[in-house]
Length: 280
Length: 276
Image 1 (tube, each protein chain N blue to C red):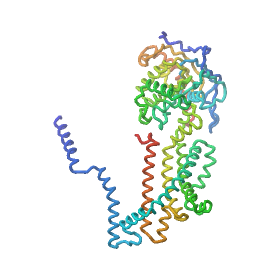
Image 2: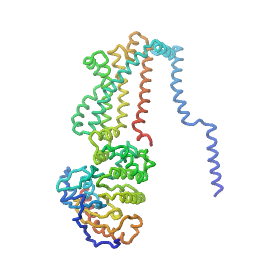
Image 3: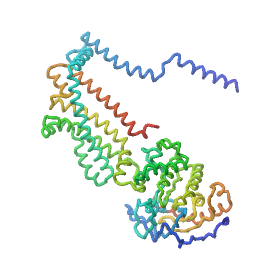
Image 4: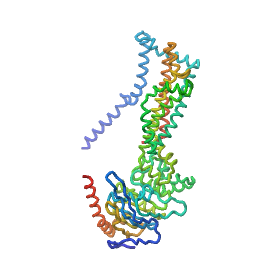
């Protein structure tokens, strides 16, 4: 059990044995009306298998772009990306999107079963898995409802169930809790940790909340303001399984969060200066 | 303090308990009015015709129209014409609606197809459909085909335009989810584009069916030997004004019936929009 915060320059061992996602000099340039926009620059990173990997950075630092590239929704401009292929025909990744991504025309059940239905799995298997994850997210009773009949927190639980039920190799989470109120956020973080403990899949989780990063993650990558580069790569020194509120009450937690803010503060100020400059 | 609260609540209670004794609920009044106003108009019409206040050559008494309707039902004519019109409407609905739906969704999904088709649609849509009846008669002849084509054209545009708009209205995130979860093109079509566009598709179908009714009446007046439109045109030629009114009533009833049916269909196909 490590209770002391690590040294401020604690950098993760990049040569971890079992690497799931390997980025080398990844760069993404968007062509815009005002000329090329560098969203990501020379990003080099190894994410070990089974790691709950957090990326924190100021808004506009390209975190979402990175996730969308890994999800196959964007292409990168330069560099190489290697993602370990799943062994047995399982999907490589599933994304939990920011905001409302549930299909309003499908019931909770059909939303959660979406990935499995697209892969045309046997009905019995779909029933098993969807039933399991709806149960784990406390939604079994609501499986016949439509998304508009649910609260925001319940909707985000459905999209968590949808991603986990799909049984991907890697889970990509794009600020899934950012639209929720603080109480709901803590509850969902607890639930996410519990579900994750069952399978310990590789997770890449993006957030702008330092608290969320420290609460959930094994490792935290702090990114710079535009263009997005790696600024610091830190190991979170807290054991698992974790209790969100208990963890946050520890002095060591506060110190660790404070350390990360040290990295982030300059970047947040820079991001703000950039915003103000481009607004003129 | 407690005293004033008690008084206030007593007064409120009294007011509430008095109300049902003296007033019919607002909803019942509305329903009553809805039934009473057309009946009152019919009665007024009947009286006016009876006393010769209106010219019965143009506005025959409702009782006369009703009697004529009974005759037309008994001799089977009304049924024959009704079936002829429904037959054309049905096939027009299929031949106009199905391609409009397929093309509309494809246009919503494909930017390329949209830029090819949009100018064509924009150029042909404003042409009054009634104005192309002579051309359609020329091409498809006086048989069933020309009537079916007219209905199909009337349905095609509202359904096409609304379907495309319906697909374009689907938030991009839903297509991202489909892609991330490995949906094929066909699966995206069936699970995202079609259900997502369904609310506007239904709007298009309702508009289209209304247009179909207008056009079938018109087409049957000019180039047909059967159908409700023909029945009314023929009635003009033999000066049977009552029959004309029967035709009008039946077409109006069809319009009401179709919209009731379509509302039920919509409730079934778009359960996620009403259940609020």
